[in-house]
Each structure stands twice: as C-alpha cells, then as structure tokens.
Length: 243
Image (tube, rainbow, N blue to C red; front, side, top):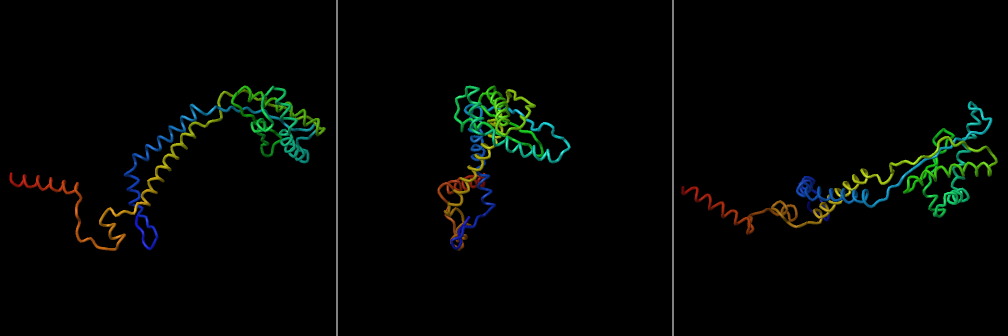
C-alpha cells in the first residue's frame, strides 16, 4: 500500500500476503466467535417452543364450487386475523388460562397466518414453556372463533386441528448462531488486520522508498540482527574454505 497525490493505492497481493501471515489470528478469532455464540445458545438463551392451532372458515350452506363464496371466505379470513389480536380476545385468553401477561406481552407471543388461496387461519403461539404454548394456541382458537361469531353475527370458524405441545424448541437456532459467530469473528479479524495494514505508512523495504519518495536506492544498511546473521555466515564460509 502507498499514497500518491493524497490517494491511497492498495496492493491486493500484498494485502493477501498480510492476511495469510495473520491466518492464525484470523482462525483464532473465528473460533472465539463460534464459542461465544455457542455458549450463549446452549447455556444462556432460554428455549422457545411453538404450537399451532388451525381454524377453517366456511359459511354454512357455502358451495365449494362457488367462486363468490370462496372470495367472501377469503375476505373473512382477513377480518378474523385482525379481530384475533383485539384486546377482548387477548385478555379473555389471559383470564381463562390465568396468565400473568399484559396485553402487549401476550400479543407479541401470537402470530396469525392465512396461507395464500385458502380459508385457513393458523394461530401460532410461542412461549418458554411448551405446554403453555399449546394451551395458549388452543385457547386463542376457542375464544377467537366464539368472539368473532358474536361480533360479526356469522358462523363460527371450525377448529380442525388442535395445538399440541412440541418438545423441540424453535429458538435459539444453535447451529445458525454458531455459524454467525464464526463469520462475525472472521470478518472482525480480517477487518482489524486490513485497517492496521492501510494505516501503516511506514517504510519497510527498498520498494517502499521508490513508492513513497520516488527515489532509487543506492545502498542498504542492514540492521543489527541482519548484520549478526551475515557475520555468522561469513564465519562459517571462512571456516569451510580453510578446511
């Protein structure tokens, strides 16, 4: 790397050499990042479990072949999705299950999905307790379909799949977190090395003199270490010649 007319020019081959020279530090930083994120995922982060209850929206007397009825049911799915998040539904679920959550806290644990081109509503709840997650999803489905029917004066959606307690947590994603930790450590290490390389404008070789000063090198004075090495080589050469 050298500066010319206040512009920094980077020698990519030299930069690659610098990175290779510090490969041990880069690998070490990557492993530290992996270890930190792995320790967080396995030892610190609380597991989050997920359960889903499913509703089916179909008005009584609806013809399965009627395009208009299908459109109406799809529109109702959007209305139901909004009403499930209403305060009366959320707080009724909290009351029925004796949950000590505020409206905002409980609402954050629930997500609603209406798969494209279907009249299905998937009510998914996440919780640190797998049984509580399934109980919440089922209670949301029960309360929502009854509340929606009363408010909209329409038929109740049908609960066609109850939520079950899933023993496999969905969070934290341990492998994904460890990969992120590895990449983050790798990137940080490479970034630090590259910044140090770019900020280092000291003259280290004869080539740097030509790059920085535009002068030709007439002679080189070895440092003390290099001089000792040369003296040792001369001594060994002289002894070999005498023999």
